[in-house]
Image (tube, rainbow, N blue to C red):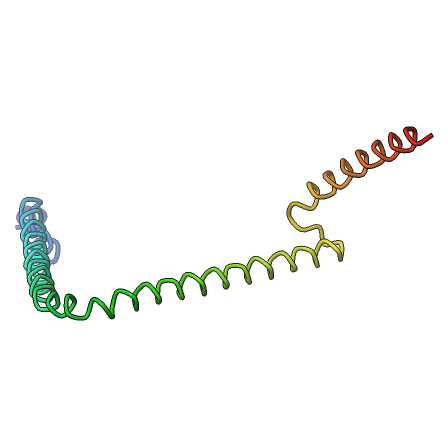
Amino acid sequence: MADLHQHQQPPMARNHHESSPSPSTRQTVRFLTAATIGMSLLVLSGLTLTGTVIGLIVATPLMVLFSPVLVPAVITLCLLTAGFLFSGGCGVAAATALSWIYRYATGKHPMGADKVDYARMMISEKAKELGHYAQTQTH
């Protein structure tokens, strides 16, 4: 009886091992889940396409009737939008430039300040050379 008791697995381990699905069962479940989701999305995309085509069929005569009004309105709206976006972009660029100049003037050394200092030094040297050349030409 002791021999028989030693070879038996505890009930919890035996139930856990028996209840876990095999790898092929897992793959089958994954495939079926993916296929179900894929088919659902395919049906949804087909319905969306059908609705879009029906909407286009209904809206086309209205677009043709109202095109003398709609085309200039759309052009005007596009120009207004482009103008506002350009104006906003210029405002952001100006604010960024003023912020950079303020940080440069207060000595906080913003990014690119070393290049500005180098360019200022080169321009100063060229101006001195030209000034010296102009002075020698007048005498």
